[in-house]
Image 1: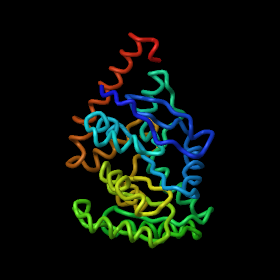
Image 2: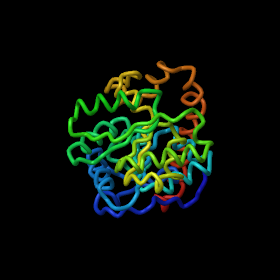
Image 3: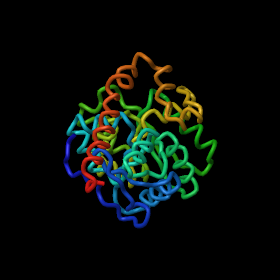
Image 4: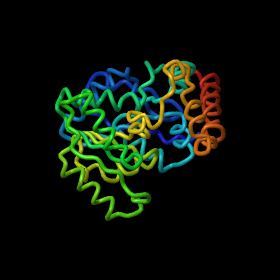
Length: 272
């Protein structure tokens, strides 16, 4: 297991934001869903640019396989546990997280809070046309929500520095204080880390496929499946060709990470 003494970039906000646990050498903010929402809207109203990651099982596995992914996470201001397996593992390992904080739930909830606080937002990414339809749905749901821009980049845009700079300029010109990036991991995190200062948004957060969830193009698992940690199975049934290798082969490494840390803690009580 890599040991890089990872730390999360310090938050300027006090109280709940400072509660953290370290699982699999990855520091996570130990927040409830409502605490996370409070901290996120505070960051969006702050003076500096902040960056937030929602970590699931796939992200944990990538974190251990790819040093560049570890770098992305250690630069984040908050890392939230998006996945019941992480919550269960935290309890097994004696470092309990209070609950799952899923990015797909945070996105509409944070938009609702942004509407209340009149904080402007920008939607970047998603399938063609999805961000625009998502904006229409959410502004109908929350009339005070200010979606000041949407953009779906061309495939491969991340390899074109001029294109990336143009997108960052677009976000900055919009005046958005929250930038939601739906490009999938780790592409969305790579873009945020490289361009968050240029974008100017006070809070940037990767939200994966959340635009499509809001639009109904991809149907989320029923709540009971989410509660028992099988949302991944629902996604696999919907997109087997794209997801089978990730879920059935690559993410199997998560079980080894849990067993390794459990055994390490059992042999060395001082590490608890």
